[in-house]
Every structure is written in structure tokens, then in C-alpha cells.
Image 1 (cartoon, rainbow, N blue to C red):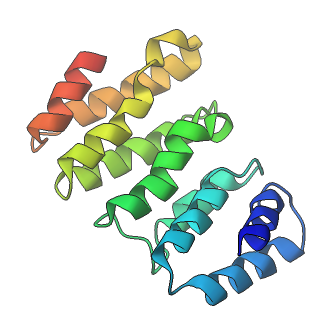
Image 2 (cartoon, one colour; image 1 turned 120 degrees about the vertical axis):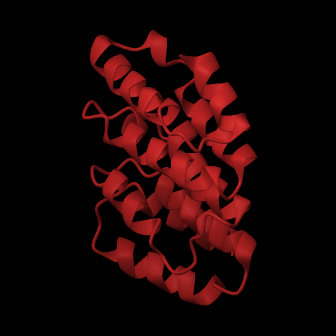
Amino acid sequence: MTNAFAALSELCHWDHPYRKVALNNFYRKWKQNPEVIDSWFTAQALARQENTLAEVQALTKHPDFTLHNPNRTRSLLGSFCKNNLRHFHNATGAGYQLCSDNVLKLDSINPQMSSLLLRSFAHWKHYDNNRKSHMKGQLEKIKETPTLSRDVREIVEKLL
């Protein structure tokens, strides 16, 4: 499994016809092992392909993805927001929106996990004006949500 996963992780970065086949085959073989499937989500979240953001958005609707599972949330969204800097910091702001939308969804389920995901915005003031503006907009959207948990409200107020 280790060798197969290493190959799959590398293949995730390439637009190759076998990529989807390999992802589906790996999933079918290992779907009974939650830790391996967490890694399967992470490999896709870290991909360098142009359509990674769209794929991560689609994976949030995968039958095995749930915000109720902290490990699964960390594997997909945490990996994307904290470790896929190219796509999280996409100049359109779409990566920030994906993160903030899920921070808000997750807040009522697991405020601690939501506040950890929110920390992906921690250095927003250090980016160029375009990205800074997008990040600040998402932070303000979160702050304006009336039902925020104390955990998330504390973090967002500190960040702003």
C-alpha cells in the first residue's frame, strides 16, 4: 500500500488520463480503511493541477466526506487551506471562499476544528492588496455571522 500511495500522490499532480482511474482503483481497494482514505483525500487536496480547487469543492460532496469527522475535515480542507498555498491563495479569492464557507458550516458541528481551519487566514495582512482584500472580505463575512461560536468569534476578531 505504501508504494501504491506514493505513486498515487505523485500522479495527483499531473493531468494524466490514468489519474482518475488510479484514484478510483485506490479508493475501491482501500475504502474500508478510514486512515488510508484520509490520506487519499489529502493527496488530492495537495495536487498542483489547475483544477485542484474545483476538485476539492467536489470532494466535499463525496459520500465519504463529512464535516462531522475531524480527521476527514483535516485531511481535505485542512490540507488544502494550510498546505496547498498555490490554490488556497488563488488570485480570484475562490480558495478563501471555500475555506470561509466551510468554517461557517463547521462552526455549529465542531467549533474547535472550525477555529483551526480559520487560522489559515492568520497572515492575511502580509499578502498583496488583491489577496489581502479577498481574505479580509471573507473574515468580515465570518465576523458578521450572528450565530458564531465563541471559539470562532475570538479567532476572527483577533485576525481582524
